[in-house]
Length: 76
Image (cartoon, rainbow, N blue to C red):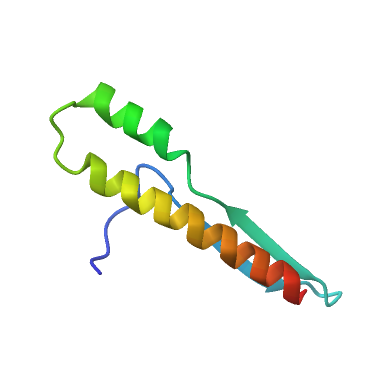
């Protein structure tokens, strides 16, 4: 995976940490709506060849993050 400069749009972020009181903190920013992403890309450049790939990634991240979030909440 190549490392890039600061991203233009955050697609997914999750961190799990423990506080000094021993509490679990879950920081979660889920993916945006795939429909919204597709509309934005189509408006920006209808000929952009990677729109469908990005929309598929967003859908995958949404499914993955929802399951991961549920699994973590089930443990804590």
